[in-house]
Image (cartoon, rainbow, N blue to C red; front, side):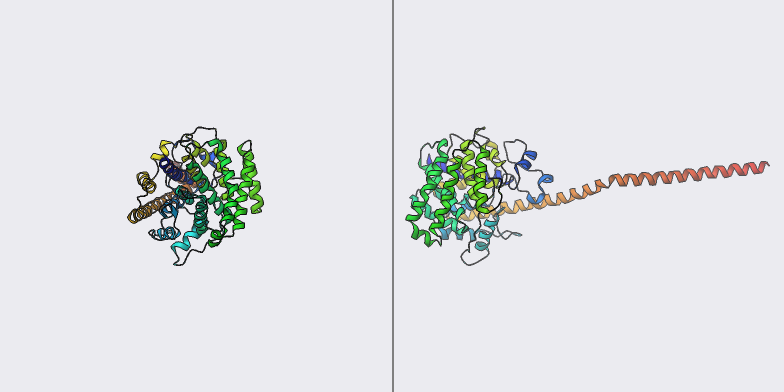
Amino acid sequence: MIDDRIMNILLNSIIGDALGSTFDGLSRGHTASIYRDSPGYFDPPVKKTGTEKWKKPGLYTSMSQLMLISSMSMERGRFKKKAFIENIRRSPKVENTPWGIFRHTGMAEKKFLDTILNSAISPLTQNYSSARLLPPVISLSFGRMSENDLVHDSAAMMSLMTMDYHTISGGILLSSLLNHLLSMESPLLKDLLLSALSISRGLRAIIEKNSPDIFSLRLNPDMLSAAADSYSDILSEIIDAPDKLKAEEMITRKISRLMNSNVKKASLDHPLAILPYTLYLFHSYQDDEKKFLHTMAKEGGAASALTSIAGAVSGAFPDNFTIQPELTGQLVNKKKIASIVETIVSGRKTAHFIEDFLISESLLTKKEMEEFNAKQKKDKKGAKSVKNRKNIEKMMTTHVVESWTKLDKARWKKTRKNMIQIDDSESDEE
């Protein structure tokens, strides 16, 4: 039973990523104007979004790729940092991209992958905050380890990708929450926010208790605890929010103070916004249980991070949420992904298995790039046609004027010739 829920968490997270990716960067208003209700994946019109933003519908991004690689980097229930780095470095290079097999990476992912793939030294992490760094830590929640070990391993993995404390503590909170939900036979959806709040409040004590281990990761325990407290503060406010708009206002007010800017949407690519907001959307969801991912994807912004996390959380509540068959059926590489997830959960992964996964991902990335290039060529050809169409009226006008001018001239010559003939005949008669 628990293995089925673990598989659901992984698969649903990948499906959420694939669905949300084509909504990334869109505003809610933009999404509302171009989205047509469909049970499958969304392919935005190129005229509305631009070819440069196109992503293949149904194809997951670097978040899911890193999540699967982190799953393959677990040994005896513990995360192995060295194996994670080596597995990433083993990935094949892909022409015309410095990030190899990894698709649609955000800035934080680019910086992390750049140091891993293009440098022989240990990764030099950056202080980038990004909700896209949270899904890779999902796999650690399956380790059946103690809460102390889970916090340590989650911090170890997150600190490889960034030294931003809100992102690191967000990863710890997400893995701890999923681990907690898996420990319960039938978790209640109505208790989701309360569980997240309770876990976030308990992180300070765990971090303080394991300060030496946290220091060994080059992290400041006090700063990590303070970041965890930020999640507690937001969760304690939104748990009583009467609706989504009020919850969003509470979240953005906190983020605005943190970032010293006027943030309006909780779908911003920041873990302190995305994680609490995603949990609240579950807490307040009252629509069709099969449409929850589409409803959340329409939030736009960092949609793929939101729906990837949402998919993972839904996997812990199989009685409350159902993935639409079209999303499962239209997932790119679905049979391979299902087999990979089953192998990961069963613990039968081998070096050959990991190699096979990395090669298959390189082929998918190349294929998407080929489709992207084909769309760009088609778009340029369409743009040229549009330019010609703009000149059609002018061309028609010129053609008509020239045609009538020639016709008038011919008629005038004929009329003039007839007039001359008439004059000549009259002269002869005289």
